[in-house]
Each structure stands twice: as structure tokens, then as C-alpha cells.
Image 1 (cartoon, rainbow, N blue to C red):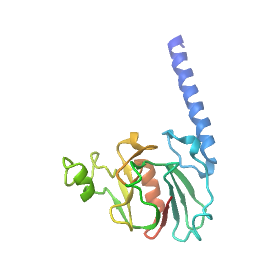
Image 2: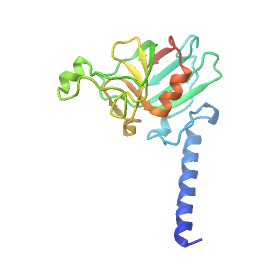
Image 3: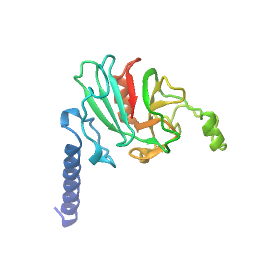
Length: 191
């Protein structure tokens, strides 16, 4: 093996071991979502118990912590717990907190800017259909609050940052996984 090949192999082994070590710090292995994308804010990720936030997990429960930029999911029978890095709203004015629920699930959502978005950004299109240019990514969980969604994003640089106009964004592979786990009526709490 050439010295260049050994150096490349050693670099890959080091990076893989480093990523594995960071991932193990984030939460217990059984509780984490499997991903090949490291979190920018991984030190703030920790497994949480659902009981301080919900009286039950009927139909499942989603907790979005805007401070740590993390989404926690518990299945109805509590056999599944997932922890995902998220994007959060850019400003306090755009941030909504409180209790809501999933009222609609859409694969390949279309996007329309809200009136407030259009006022701030008149150059934005009035409509974007499903596909790689869609800000909602591949899947969207519509909440009972008008204009608020938990959705994917094709722009992975947004995850772990304040980057949205009010919604909670996830990597597309994470929203697909969460989408499959949730049902209409899943309770959601944003803190």
C-alpha cells in the first residue's frame, strides 16, 4: 500500500472514529436516530423523558426544543424514542411556542409563502411545487397552527441553525423517518 493510500485510509478511520465518539455522546444509542450527518450543536443533544412535557403519549408525542434545536419523538407505547437536530425560526417574532398537533401529513408538499413572508420578500415566487427547489423538502407534517409545519429541507446547511421563517426543519431522511412514525393527532409541544 502506498504512503498516500495509508494516509487516506488513516484519515478516514480517524474521521469515522471521531464521528462515532461524538454520536455516542449525543444520546444513548438505542434512543438516537441513525444518521451519517453530524450535528453542529451535538453537545446540547441529550435524551429526555416525556413525562415533564406530556400527561401521556397517546398517538405519540413530539417535543421541539428551540433552544437546543432538537426534536424529540416518543411513540404511543414509548418503545420508540428519536432525537433529531433541527433548524428553528430566525427570530423570536417568528417563533411560536405551546401545544399543537399534527393535523395533516403530505409527501412531496407544495409551498406558498405566507402573506408576511411575501411582504418581507416580494421577489419570492407565489408557489413552488414538489422537488429540489421546494423549501419544505420531501415530507411535511402540518400543525394545527396556520402556516406552521415540521418539514424537511434540501438545504442541509440550515439544520442546527436559526434559519427558518417559523417552521421546524429536519434533514430529509429524518423527516421521512418521523413522518412514518407519526399519525394524525400526534401531540406537539414547542418550547
